[in-house]
Image (cartoon, rainbow, N blue to C red; front, top):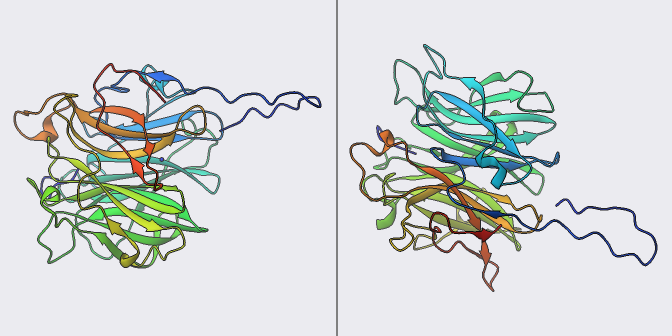
Length: 344
């Protein structure tokens, strides 16, 4: 959600006697969209404790919430806890955006964007840490701002590991560039500190990335089939909002921008027939069967918005299965219509 100023199986391994059949994995549940109303920039983490943990941007932009369930569909009615609130003054006082929950080296981390209460468009990336095994308990310690190469508009941080190295990907405005944000990548020294250079992976340059605002933001990584896929969102956060895709070979140097190939067209966009508009800021999780990849995203149910899209609270969290093409690349299809049941 960027603006300047605008804007991620457990097989039941029972020990069976000789000749007995292994227990079958649970089937993927059925669901109805929207999964969670009025929650944008969704992030779902499936943890080893068997729970799905959900967080997202709330329309008031003033707090970070968590809910959990043993099924994806159960997140709809799961109790929601406020784990952190914006400061009344100073840093982290406004525009609390796009939280992501990650488990790193035995601790929980929340990455999110925030601005000072007195300067609401001075948005930067911040990190919270919780050492309790249960992220709904314990204390969230403010680890501070993620310091990048410039003190400029930055947001939408996500972290992942590849071949033993931890990376941070995020969106940021580069000084001197005629855009809102590009997507950047850096290695990490620890969960809140970058290490070494930061490289630009994609900048808004294609027509569909520059409608309303020149935006590349909301990166997220899915590693499958010998490749690293990075989705990102582009254009203004109205019905023009859509998802692009970068692809790198698994054995390539991810810090070399030349390793990444950009799709020339959006891979996920508004669809008049299903009545879903502005799908984007996605993440990925896996279904209850432990095999089916699931796309998690937000979208609106209508095209026309009165006033600033940021003031419209009706971006709802939705999910649907990821299909895979014969060449091993993802096929996201179109955002499914509300109340359409599909297997995930």
